[in-house]
Length: 610
Ligand code: F6R
Image (tube, rainbow, N blue to C red):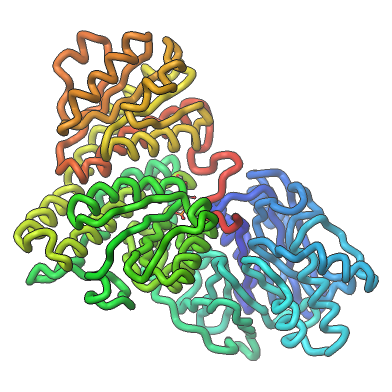
């Protein structure tokens, strides 16, 4: 969702801003804009051409004469208040053209502020909630003639979750930056100040990163070639490099990220267990003694992250012997859940910024529960608010459809399950060691699955003409079915659903005919035969059958079924390999239809609104 890039100093150019915005494209947007400011004036450009907006802004920059500016600030907008249009694109300016603002998130009390400001004579150019911010700053400045104080007072009035950057166009050597439950990161090199919604936008320029604390106005200025931050925020350790946000020799980020899965999982598992077999988490503000008392685990997340949590539930219940509830973050928060200090609420979030999950965690904390976050972004809002953090080390994920972070999340959650089992002694240390060894085998199995991508693509060719897809699985195969259906609908817009295989006969089987494909997740397990019986039921009703299996059923060829063969791993870890052909299938269908798998319509990578 909305992307922000701001630069003050010698490196403040239209080119640098547009390059930063390009690296935030994955967040999703429908319009884009920028402001360039120097001591002699400013220029604003806004474009609203859906996902071509950044490319068109790029063309505008290319056609422009390179000019020396002091500050440049750009934005990609994902419409919430006011349709996508040039006037609604950011930056927004006040009536006196003194301030420019870019914003990500929602100003919940914008209506009342707008009404008040209208009565005071302010004129609004857009339908956005954002515009009230800049008029509010103008209004405060009119009263106290102090920019810092004006911005600070304006921020105090705003309700909702948001990241905001204000530029004083009359003195373009400073940026005023604030965030509340929305991402924003500051960067510096020797003599330039940078701010952005996410680290990838800044990777080629910044030497030191800083995290913006919640609800704290940070003023960054560049004066006489020196960067000053006031108050000085905490340094953020970032170990991503520019190659990780470059598509390299791949046709798109999704295929690159599918390929990176063995590495993503290996890095996530690496270094978690010391020589004497003790497992460690990254940041633990709960004592192991307290964790031993955990009586119930609740996992919250959205989309793919929720599916990773669903996979882990089986391992947590089996290894740790505690009840595990799992719930969509946006529902959890409003259902008055029964929580206590012996409940551990685990938030799973690639970005660590998804508002629904963040609010669910804050609800959990308020009810006295302990919280733990699985996140891919070091220092993300959720990582900072939780009692404990376990980072996935998948590296930046650019494609909107999650792939490598799904696998890494499951890996991290399995580590958590083994950590708790060890702590609570529900497994013998030797059993924990054995399972860790099996978990450490999964990256190699993933590499084997990746080496079969061309086979998976060949199989997918036989499915191109079908109308509807149903994914079925039992036990850990069920969340894999949900994830397969989500990937397909996200990037191909094909109607697709995931079901527990046993549930088919209670309704969904009515949809089965010869225009339907049924993909069965059928890795060998105790429920294998039962699953094959469900496959019989759909085959008998004309569906095209595809089986994901670590051993091809003997009669599959005879029956005309297609098979995605995957390597065999421990059953509870099998989702990490079973998902690969489903990701490849969705990607192949997307590309065959001429779609861009990295940027599906209507979707944003980081969802910072409710
Ligand atoms: C699907 C996908 C989304 C995210 C969801 C949660 O491919 O990427 O469903 O999983 O929006 O995002 P995070 O994990 O950042 O909280």
